[in-house]
Length: 626
Ligand SMILES: Nc1ncnc2c1ncn2[C@@H]1O[C@H](COP(=O)(O)OP(=O)(O)OP(=O)(O)O)[C@@H](O)[C@H]1O
View (cartoon, rainbow, N blue to C red):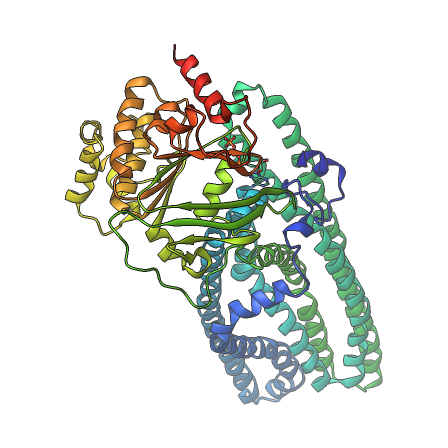
């Protein structure tokens, strides 16, 4: 199981630490440059806004950084003038200082507003892309990637990017601009001292590169481990009944303990790295200041430098290094965001396994009896390379109801999933009225095929909303009529708010049979040409089952149907039974013929003498009823 992998692997996030049990390489490990490309595509629509933000920020920095220059001038010019009785220079410098203050305040306000607009636009687009992409990705991807990891991408990874956009970016631009603009002013004031200050860039770069490298790895570890914890939460809570029934709590707690400890470790690592980095920057700044002051003081004493210029230089050096504290924090935010963005880019880089057609085909006019379904030399295996269906050749005429029966693991659901186009065949084709499913767009497909699964999933919203899912423009009358046709009207009307009852509200919980009826009503209203039904099994009591059987006959009327049948009663209403064994259709005939042993023994391997597999299954069912 994946969690063992979690505890034994390094925290660099390259392995299966997110709990999929598969190496990330199998899921398309983010390629170098994916994150950068993603960022570029997100920023592209805001290019103009970003240019304005950069210009405004530059103006703000220039106005702010002019301060020390004015102070230097005040010391060297205004004070001597004032002593001599001329206050003009002092007034002029005071006005200029106030003007700089105003420009700084105004441009900072403008920067915040402009940057907020662009930043929020980027986040809006990023969230929309993740959600849209997660919905579009095929079933095989979801079976391996786990919903916990997707949730983690959409929440904590997006939060990391959000933090950068909202706080970090401001700190980062301020620190970088202040540093370089101040250095520029230093060169204007005194070149030798500016060069001395610039030599501080060497240890500064070494420290920054060291920190950036080490912390990037650590932050990637935090993203990976945080996703693994989310996955663990979701898996535990989704399966809480099984967890409690099988007393899995201690094992889950053990797994969580490992992840929790890992998360603490990687977080501590990032904090320790930061604890080295931030003071190192301050130390470099202070040493540079001491050096500049010492050399400057000698030159003032020699008369080679004015006192005001030295004061201005000292103030500039302080200004350069002061926001570096913010730079360290901003780098922190940046590293978290970069790791998050990398993970998000990895998710977005996955292409849906079931592709939309380049040129959509068109289906012939639909007959009143549904459509013909053909499996034409279909071979299929899931991604692990094992062939599950070696070859299926099958034609289901319009209007026919086919029951798929067979042992567990025989391949019945796989046949149904290929027909619903959750997957594409490895070779061969599945066709609807002769048209390959691969030539149909998703909306075309969804209009023609409806699959009712065992869970009869209800979405949050009212019962009416749930029935109308397959046909959102249905009127209330049509919704009620569908419910009435299936014998579901009475129990829905008796719910606290009737058809408007919120299915997730307490007191409105529907039984398994009732949920199945709602799912049937949904299918009836959607009116597909082909209905695929993964039959609910043991959860229905006998009266409920009868109601469902009656409803089933109604919903099958006028369409082609494929039912994965687990019950004798369902098989008996089918026109034709296909027995699936080891991914092949081994018997094919009407229920009566197969019981009598005269069906088409497709594989020529009667399981029990003349009786056949279905005959044996049928006998077992009958015996279980008495
Ligand atoms: N997503 C998947 N990835 C890999 N293998 C799978 C996947 N789903 C099913 N299989 C394998 O394919 C084979 C056929 O499974 P399938 O679910 O079609 O059987 P089934 O006849 O519907 O069984 P049941 O009656 O128990 O639902 C099994 O060996 C199963 O392990």
